[in-house]
Amino acid sequence: MTDLTIAAAATPLGEGGIGVVRLSGPDALVIADKIFRGKRGKLIDLKTFRVRYGKIVDPGTEKMVDEALAIVMRGPHSYTAEDVVELQCHGGVVVVQEVLSLCLAHGAKLAEPGEFTKRAFLNGRLDLSQAEAVIDIVRSPTRLGLEVAVDQLEGSLSRRINDLQERLYQIMVQVEASIDFPEDDLPDVEVSEIEAGILLAVKEIGELIATADDGKILREGLKTVITGKPNVGKSSLLNTLLDENRALVTDIPGTTRDTIEEVVNLRGIPLRLIDTAGIRESQDVVEQLGVARSLELLDQADLVLHVLDRSEPLSEEDFEVLSRTREARRIVLINKVDLPPLWNVEDLRDIGNSPILEMSLLVDRGQVVNRLADVILNLVGSGDIASSAGSRAMITRTRHKQALHQAEQALGESLQTLQQGLPLDLIAVDLYSALEYLGEITGETVRENVLDRIFAQFCIGK
Ligand SMILES: Nc1nc2c(ncn2[C@@H]2O[C@H](COP(=O)(O)OP(=O)(O)OP(=O)(O)O)[C@@H](O)[C@H]2O)c(=O)[nH]1
Ligand SMILES: [Mg+2]
Image (cartoon, rainbow, N blue to C red; front, side, top):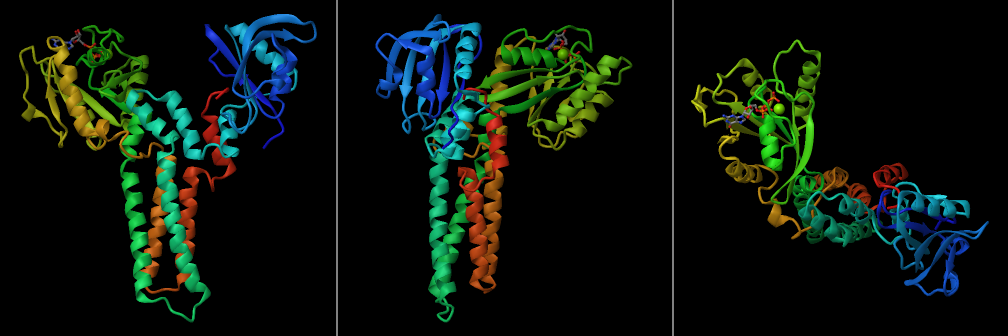
């Protein structure tokens, strides 16, 4: 527990119904009492989970700053497990800042990003995967993403990890018992029992890792880059999927020069759609920059939507981009089929097994969205993200996935040691590191710099 009391605005700075300033720490009530004048006495005398109406004043002059409600939540039953006071004032930029300044002037320290949640973790109220779920809840781009994050906050992942750890501990106990009494060689039954236990753990870790692709998509969205040469209909596609005229569409090739990014909710899957400048050789400096950026984005895409125009001859630019995205998860969209065709699907090269969709963004916009949604949902993740989310623990972060991979590897090594009949001390070492890697997920064994990185992603006041 720390002896510093922190304060921050818990609501975004802007106009709103209410604005909340939150205090947490041993002096939360004392500091609040310095600036809050309750109608019926001091907050320090108030029971936990009670609300009091009153005024916020500058104690030097007793001048009123705002009227407010004060909520008292005493530790350990509070968000941070410390004493917490939330001051609900009117939701305005200046008034919230004034109330916060008063808290800071009377003994509180300005909270760092994520510091409230970090305290909840350090005080043992949440484990690390649950603390991470808090920020995922705040940021979740769709309802499905929210469901997965809420499950994680509820401990779905923690329980799986704790369960795995518990069983590995038991194996460890068996192994260590036999190290302590080396004269009694381990009977064969016990060796095969240990082996079976480790194999089962490896299998379960593998199952968790297998959810990582879907999990990442639900948490972060699918980075979807729309590419193709100029004038094929890329911006028309963006507008169609968004159902609004977000990007400029003209019949002049080279209309889009900068990238445009928008999030679309496609049956629960968040697509981070990026419309890019059409790719071609250009003398125009601005357009060249746009093309360079398009190419860069192509390399980072989770999904590429390559648009082609069937009413214009295929060109080297078409083929260049097709060959560049050969390895990518890609859908080839043949547009403008309402116009007389100048080529056929057979004329395409470097298509691999990318699905092909023929369409007209001018004539059947409504159908395009549905057909494209079917193809995308088939192509990404497990193909059935929507129904698998919420029904099981999912891995949504690279950090968790890496820790699981490392645990898997350590267990793999312990199996080899076992199969080669090497001394059991060696297995103990591998089991121990597998346990440590699993502990990184829940935060048992995580290093301080990793913690700092995690909480730095939060906003101030969370
Ligand atoms: N006939 C026909 N015209 C279309 C279709 N889709 C788009 N267009 C037209 O094609 C032109 C170019 O469309 P955009 O969406 O601006 O193309 P773009 O690929 O974004 O072009 P750049 O930004 O220049 O790279 C516009 O005049 C659109 O109205 C289609 O299916 N059929
Ligand atoms: Mg465009």
